[in-house]
Image 1 (cartoon, rainbow, N blue to C red):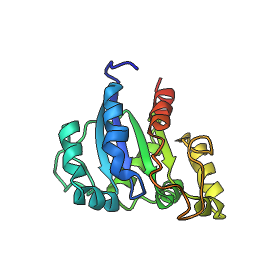
Image 2 (image 1 turned 30 degrees about the vertical axis):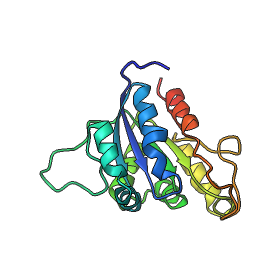
Image 3 (image 1 turned 90 degrees about the horizontal axis):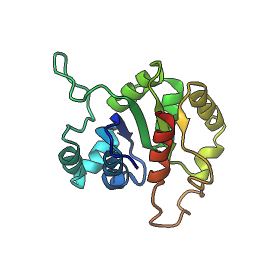
Image 4 (image 1 turned 45 degrees about the vertical axis):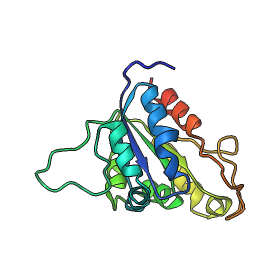
Length: 187
């Protein structure tokens, strides 16, 4: 992979299993591919990663603050302008909110705006289980995101679905597939 400067990758992560490997699985490999990375977390992901010291590690490796709350009026934007957003892992809750335009925290506000911005790619990896995917609204959520030109990293070849609490332990998120989707989306 090229280490040529690619622009700014806005990484948005939610409180879904596997988020604890965000730095080593997605952020550092994205930087190795030439991206400057700006991380924003949902409040739950922020709490989880702060508890295990990952927020500080992410800030050290990216050189930027990790956001999980809105900035105050008059405060400077803490991140540079983003060239592509990736939402990974995206909980079922986050996918539903993005599909319906609910922007009730800093992370969702950024991505909902990005989905409506012309020529700003958005890549989403739904980290869900088989029960989530059988919910009657699920297919509509995915269809709404696809209609908005969101690139979904989704399917049995990427993330086989298991029943709740039946997935093999230690299963790693498909970080490489997520980054490959970014590469394919940003030309």
